[in-house]
Image (cartoon, rainbow, N blue to C red; front, top):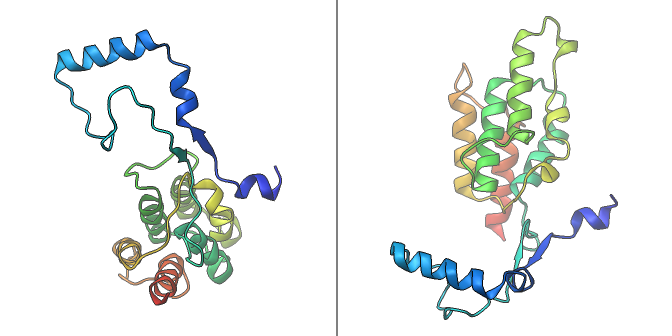
Amino acid sequence: MNVEQLEKPITYDVKHEAEKIPATEKSSEAAEDKEKGVVADASGGQAEGEVNEKKVVANPPASEGTITIGEALEAAVLTAGNKPVEWSDAAAIQAAEVRATGRTNIMPGGVAASAQSAATLNARANSEDDKTTLAVVLTGARSKLPSDKPATRKDAEGVTGAEMRNDPHLTTYPTGVAASVAAAARINQAK
């Protein structure tokens, strides 16, 4: 894949997909829903039988000039990339992923899952050379997140809280994950 393909958001044409469903299937499903007493308010004022022509974007680009949570995670590579991943880092990365995606569960193969695995392996490693660093886990974080959003103050507070709760000294690493998300939130708030 080239850079242009990675930056282009994935879109789905809802109208085109709706046209593929035969009219008899649409009406039978609607009849079943009415029999069950199911009411769908999600249509946004759309009359029954109309097709919504909006395109759905899987990973929308962030507002221009704002720093996303994924970008903040990648920035942590520059500031603390050589630091071995600890439990507090894994917790902060998980909190950041949850806030960026809006999902409460950890995605297999995602940034948080990689961080938890690295923290577990690092806890068992005998030498510092065998430990996995933040650079290994956070490089390409934006591409591992299914969705991303601009960092806010609430996001920074949540990530900082998670990192502190999972640190034996109840502190955050000065240039770590929480610091990067907090810096992104401050920059975004100033705009």
